Length: 124
Image (cartoon, rainbow, N blue to C red; front, side, top):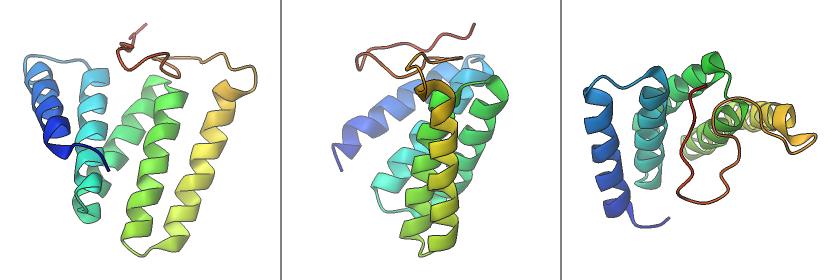
C-alpha cells in the first residue's frame, strides 16, 4: 500500500496549507488525501466521509478526473466495509466520470490526469 508515514506527512503539510485560507480545491485535495491515507491504513469507516466530501467538492468544482479518482477510492472503501453494492455503484460512477475527459484524452477542469507526480492542480 505504500509508505503511509510519508503520506501522513504530506497530509499534514496539505492541512497546514488549507488552514491558512486554502481554496475549496485545496480542501477537496485535503479530504481526498486524508481519506486515501485512512483507507491505506485499513480504516474504511473513517475514510468514507472524507472521500464523500472530496468527491462532492471535486464534482462541484467541475473536476471530472479528480472526481473519478475519489469515486474509485470510495468504491474500495465500500468494498473493505463489505458493502459490495455500494462499491459497484461507486466504481460505475467513477467510470462514467472518467468518460467526460477520456474520450479524446483531453481533460477538462482542474488538473486532469497528472503527467508527473509533481503536477499542480490549476483552479481556473
